Image 1 (cartoon, rainbow, N blue to C red):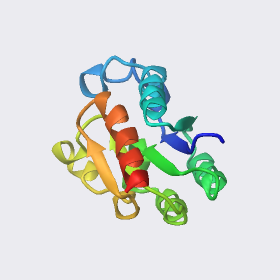
Image 2: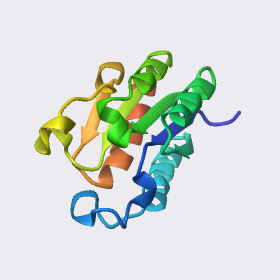
Image 3: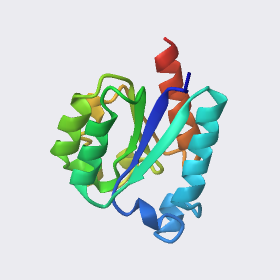
Image 4: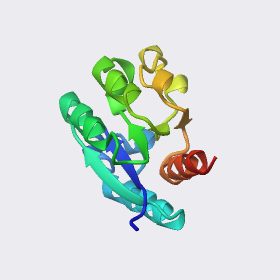
Length: 147
């Protein structure tokens, strides 16, 4: 029997991690973060799939494809956090735990970053812990699946 799958979704500009504003987002690349998340999933008996896109519709399609197939979702929506109602609506159709993830702490940044349209459909949010948040988010999904 195969392991339950956790989908890791990465929004716009996360493909530039390691280059883009390392003082805020750190020096690690997206590949580094995916490796951490994958190792955390393996520790918990889960498989990890990753989708990154700079296009909102691609993330919506990934959520639709996860329905009935994936056990949980970790989503770092990037700037889509603040206005992507289509991502919100897609996540609302997913039957499983959803954890919102941010490298930085949006609540401690510019006022426009304080509102998340993803938070109302997520079971929880992990923010401000840098790359460690990827491990924490996968463990949170695993804990919710075990509960």
